[in-house]
Length: 180
Image (cartoon, one colour):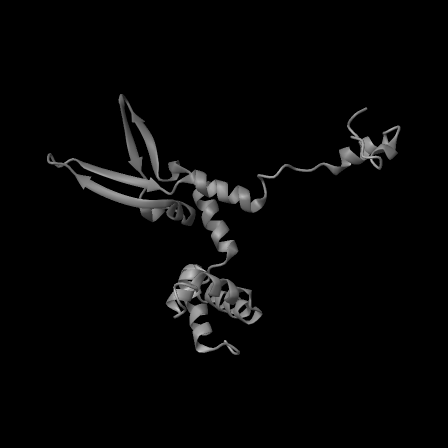
């Protein structure tokens, strides 16, 4: 972090904790009264931006966490299949639930499960609960990241309509080209 004074270096380190610039400024020793403005000023400085980027890149390499890894985890949750964990089994007139041993779970299944717990009631009956991470938020994040929530623009149709327009200059005159 060459070119930064000690307080600026501390700001960069504190900013990486929670990405809250105002709180980072306070923790770095800037006045609470002016922390918001100080944080804004600090984040606008190219040398501070470079130090933050370099520190984030270094952390990403150290932890092996990057955008691809995050997308993979979201996909594991959003596309998870509960039948890899439990199956309904029918034998004669009895229906029961059978759990797949965790040793047989693949990486995707393990990543999708958020909790496993066991309770025993007064009569000694065991209940095992397997809880998955919520699928819908993960799918929503994937949809946004992949741009699937934006309408697909079809320029070919628009160009074809304009080519067939008997009065193409009407666009130049500010008239609606869809009025025929």
